[in-house]
Length: 459
Image (cartoon, rainbow, N blue to C red; front, side, top):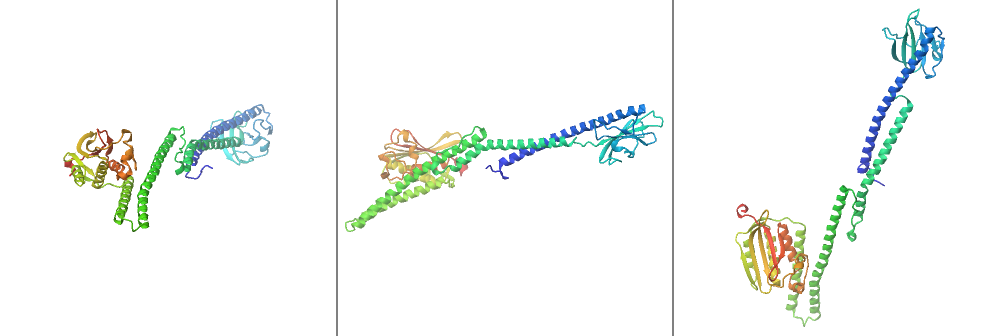
């Protein structure tokens, strides 16, 4: 059943249309009744004049009866004839033997005057009395008083009831039409609401219907776009959860097997070696959990602690702390200053270098320069290039998916958690930068771009 409480838009619109229709009908009805009332008043005056025309010849010819016949046109009309001395000499049946109905006499030179009298002598109710003068009589001026019930402003009761009935009918029809029309207009909204209410985590493939109305179409398309993003995020979350559970389960299983085997054969177990293996598993678990927590903070858009930072010094310090187990070729321009969160940018650099060390054959090349490649200013460009197997062009975006493994050269045994590059890209994006894989003659070439801050205003 449609919601018709006070907060219902459908109820408000129906009430507004019904109110407007009622006011319009009342206005037209009042005008119509006033016109009808005026017409009825004019007709009543015409009938009174006709009564005067009917009696006047009788006076002139001297054939005036004491009781005048009733008017065939208006049975409610009452007539009195008064002679020059003010005595009633003739009257219709209802005024026979009654005193004059009008005591006020016209003293001017006009032939006709009109009065409205309530309960005049011999009659009930308010009456409109027309007084006509008859001249050239031997004993003075005679008067013909013609009385008829006062015509109300609306004409008559039949017309009033007709106007009220028509107004009520039109108001009811308009209200019903408005209720139905508004209901039809909001039917697509109700369909969207119903569909959204039925969508659950197992039915994210469902979409709301798109109506033909442009305004509601935009709402439906926006809802469907949101559902698309929600479904994509949910699928990504499922894949992430599945991969994360596998990555967490693998070292736990390996440690359990090692501990169980050591307990089964305690005398034959090399305990230092076994504990070393267990400790390696714990380190891997710790690394995975740390990366997951970092991703959680990045996903939650945790605020950055920004400060002007010399990126050249930051990169140089990160390279210097690396174990010299591989040749590192560096080409770093001086005074490349950015505004950043130092801890997160340090984590980004560490992830890039860790990734390069795991997959390089013998050499890593690191370059840093300031380029004018952005419309709104210069950009710090950092390139980390290894001489390993490289990344195929069709997989250059896939490596930034969480827990992604492309081939055996980049498997879980390589020491990574599968989260380093996704974390690095999210940190770059949080700093309004980019991290991509670019073409390279050999190996993988990861390119980081961050907006540069001029040294003078930054300090």
